[in-house]
Length: 381
Image (cartoon, rainbow, N blue to C red):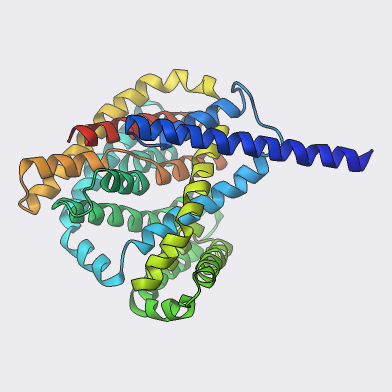
């Protein structure tokens, strides 16, 4: 009977979701036990439950997909909450030379690797971006769990992370336009309008963020949570409708909130961020066939070794510019080694555009390796 079939499907959905959430909790316990990031474990779980894995999930894939989209938005929203407009502008101005060195040191190896593997220019450039951008989520986790939020190197680490994320706010629309055909589909008017929209949104957030703060503010924590979450989803949806990255929209909303209201929103939405961010990394793993990882393990390991060295060099240069001691320079570099959110986003963008499937496999293996190496080095530091 149709009703019985629907009831059975609903039961299977709940069972699968229960297994997934309990599994994520178990992986979280393991990560905390051994002192490294949960990101690689969530990616491995996705590989195990996706196509070609040990036990592919059936009923909950669509739920995990939607959850992963919300997770990405919450990650970027929380990153915006960590920065006020004035602090952001001051950090970026003071760290521009280091940001330029970060770009050259970490973007170049990915492009060269893509070229050596015989990929076309868009795929090589995307791989360069994958190897460039550090994981803000993993870095924040390292700084918090190691008690280094007030350490002397932390401001420069945050400045580099913010510059990378702002660069991604501009890079993502360009990459999307290029992968959609670029000049072959006509003039770049839409691209220029998109970039202008991104710059205008960031400017408004920096200058008039207090307006949104007053709108969200309320004596009830429940109202603050729903208003900030709704504003984030609404702006992200409008941004995506206008062919601007939804993640950029979420970042702008987070950047607009400040003071006690921003801290309350972060407190209320933190558990949601943890849940749906796990879904984000899990869903990316679901899309990768584990058998495709074997051929790219060697290039991923080489890229990991190079990428670790270049991020350590970035931290060293940044610390020297701030006249920090050797230990602080080393710790700054270790906080930047892990790649994560944006690397996965960029790889997913390339896969959706029909670029070589090895891009997704190589990116997954690379993120796995750096997300393990980074926290381990930070622990030694």
